[in-house]
Structure formats: C-alpha cells, structure tokens
Image (cartoon, rainbow, N blue to C red; front, side, top):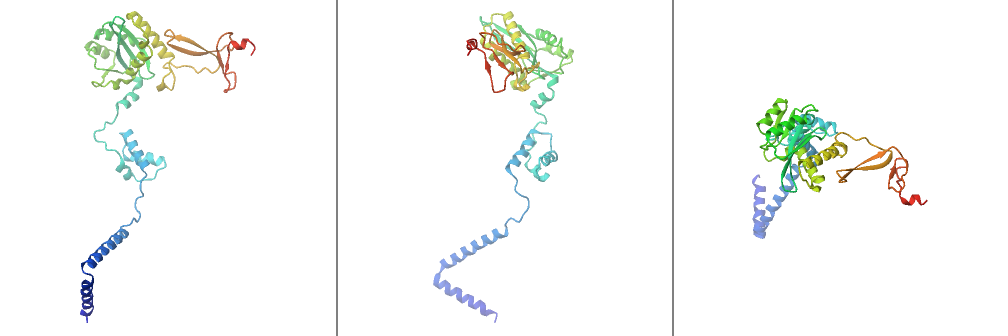
Length: 323
C-alpha cells in the first residue's frame, strides 16, 4: 500500500518528537543547512576560466596608461606582448586608468619635445649693501641649459626688456617660443618686440613658477653658488659677478641633466697633472690636466693616468728628502 511508508515515517516522527522534542528538530535543521552549504561550495568550485593576474602586471598596465595618455588598449597590449606577457586585450582595458579629465600632453612633455625651440626669460632681484634693488634679466636656452644673456639695471620696464631680448639673440638665431612669467614689466612693447622677431610669447599660468622651472632653478643656483657669498655695491659690480658666473656656468660647471657635462661641453682629460684655477675669486675652482707630466718641487700635485688605476702618486715635500 502506498500509504504504508508515509504512515511509518509519521509514527517515527511522532515518536522522536515525544522523545527529544524541539531540540532534535533544531539540530536536524542546522545539520541540513550545513550540509547544503558544503554541497553548494563544492558545486561552485573553480573549474578554470581566466587565470588570476599578477598585481605587478596590473601596476605596469596602469603605469603605461598614466605615462602614455595617447595610448589605447591595443597599443599597451602590444607593448606588453613584446615584453613577454600573455594576456587578453580586454584585460588591459579593464585595468587602464580612466582618461576623463586628463590632458593629452603634459607641460613637462611639451617642454621636452620643444626644447630646441624654447628659450626662457626671467628677472632676478638683488639687494645692494645700501638695500637698493637691482634687476638682472636672464635668458636661458632650454636645449643645453645655456645662459645666452644677462644684463643688469636699476629699473626694469617693457622698453628696456625689449632692447635686452633683441640684444640676447643678436648672435644667435631666435627661438620659436619664449616662456616667461606674468610679471607686469613684460608689457606691450616687449610683446611687440617678440612678434617682430617671429617669436611666440608663451606666458605661464598665474602662480605657477614650476612651469618655467629651468630658469627658476638657474636663479636658485645663482643665489646659492654666487650671490649669497658676495656683497653687491652697484650695477657695475653685479654685472661683472654675473658675467663671471655665466662663463663658469656655460663652460665649466657640470649639469646632472646633461649627463654631467657642461652646456658648451667639456673634453674628458685622462692624462697629465691635475691643476686648478680660481673662479669668482676662489669661490669655485676649475680643474684640468696639463699634458706635461713632471714633478714640481714643493707642490701637492696629483699625477694620474701614468700608473695603474689603483695607484695614486702624491708629490709632496717628503719626496725631495729621498723618502
């Protein structure tokens, strides 16, 4: 009979209820729920699909996306393939940085791409011993960080600046772009002179000195390496000091951005005695080698290049005593 098994289950349930009560039923339900969770976890186990992506590769995708705003997913995917990575282009698209609100070309990229055609100008203020204010106008070429022109005056106006910009490029071909700040001294006369020379005026944004960073850093170097150690009396003295520093800066001083070379270039000297000459009254020194390789009595000359690299011969007064 079909009702036989059901009747047996009903009787067993009634008996268990009478024996254990509600505790048994609660435990049975909890056991069933635990068994269901284990079964569902087994049913939902990982069966393949896309392999997990290395966090370092995700960081590389985002770095490429940030550093190359003109690149899309196909270009970045191609670069990654050439670097030995295997992934789908859709994966690259998923981890790229959003482009909304990002400019296609940064200011730094603009300066690098047009370095040969850009010159920067700025003014440096100097206080004399009597606290008078002097102005130094500086013109710097971006390509090799060359100081093209420095002139000093007690009063800087648009007419004087226009004459100085024409004087700066008398012996050089004028650049295509002049980068400057928004000082009120760069008036209409100055801008008219730039247009007459075929130069595009490119003022920086207000309160953004970093946009003219090359010449701002030059002014900082002039102060730290020169003017902070001098007392300035008048325009003639300041003109001479800045002229001497400009000669040292262009011909002798090494620059990190130029691979430790000077703006006009210095020849590597490997042989000869090391000599030095004073610059700015001994504030700096220019070291060079003399081809003549002879010991000078009573001098502390270091001779390099004629011995193995691990040996340094120092000539001193003890050498004369036969030691």
